[in-house]
Length: 239
Image (cartoon, rainbow, N blue to C red; front, side, top):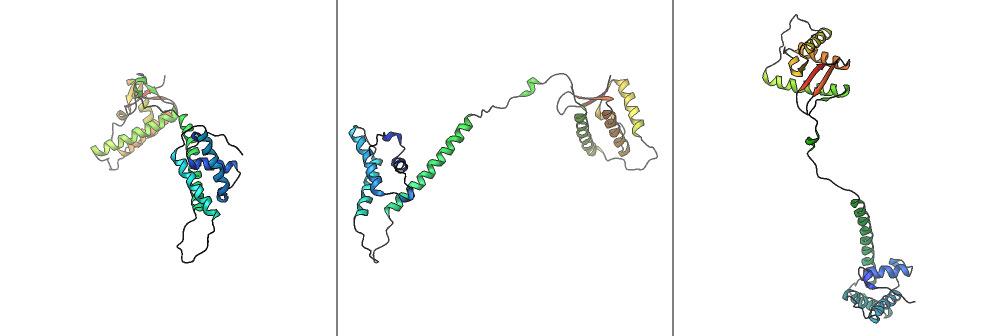
């Protein structure tokens, strides 16, 4: 059987051996040294006949195969006193199996590289240049969360200033009455910052005021606007 192959197409002697084993339809663990050696040497001779330089690693492997073939032909008398010597054929099989695993993993990495080439990254940009100067008006779901966040920040600031009044008073507050007061204030001043509505710092008053704001927002009687993130919350009456 004749083979016409350029050795430069292989990545080394082990790669060439794997190709020969595949062509011969052998199993790596059941390679026939004499047959593989013959085919391997045919490749080397073909290269030399074409006046092509053969890398030294291919010649080294050729020498190892010839040695293994010679040892397989010579009688091997058993001697219990001789030290154990690993079979070169088993060593070659182990090297081929390891190289095959490496080659298969290389294919996986090449596929991953192709996938990664399809991914394009972009450096982060400053998006403030695209921010509109006009007020940003939120829909109802965002209004509620916006107000809750503002209320939590308000309480934290007030806790650092002075404690809440804890004395029991006879003055009672209702959501409906406080809602009317807020609407009247907004009609008079057109717009009011969120913090300005908490002019009395008591637990009852703060809770009722906040519930009134939420109720007016739910009924869509007021607008909740904010110039930019983390800026003041502004309330106004809906036209």
